[in-house]
Image (cartoon, rainbow, N blue to C red; front, top):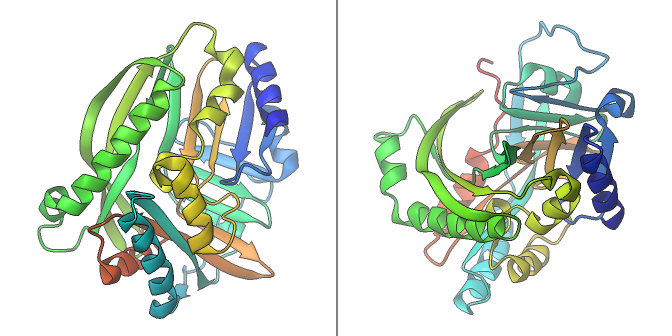
Length: 324
């Protein structure tokens, strides 16, 4: 990670555009000059900039997708371990995640091309990610973060009201907003919550879902570009997919999940020489020995119920392709 920090700071000071990808454990970060991304097999498609795979083509086959839920008893073991740690006061919000086996007639490249999302990333033969969640955005010497906490099936009766009025979801959202405010204070000043708990609608192949986000911003010093690697390191891991307090919660995550997350729930983004745009690597499909896995999770608090949290990780197993 020290090499990444040094390189990013150098690129930032020189105003040299680059793309970056950092894993959750911060053991295998990647940083590439923007012009080198195509030849590396790493592609991205943001709402404001993109690179195209060299095998780009139209896809004319019907999308097929299914998954095999992890055993309820297996999830229960991890959930109860987390709840026990929360009851002891070692954490008060923890994002618990697991992989789910999926089957689809689309390759990773085809999933990347056909899906629609605010932030997409594709590493050949490794993973595809179609994330709705911004990590940080920097423009005009201001840093913004948009933590996303709270999800519901849009087809449920009174879905918007149910989500917005849920005490559990409200508590979880407020915890993350406070955590992100504290994180941004490490690298900026004059922190403000400029938008609070607004709804966003995401279309998926299984129907639409609603999610709640907030906008938090801070003021950066002049010439922040020369410290861009240092800033990113201070802000990791992303609060919305780890929990609070961050350091102890990450230790519990590693014990409860029993495996590394890799690039899942890490971050990816690009610096264009003046501004920075980045995303949290959620809504993520990885390939291991020709088998595909969808990684998903949810925030656990003292008031979380086992069956509801199990259902949430299944609810998030979707591909943002509008029709089957």
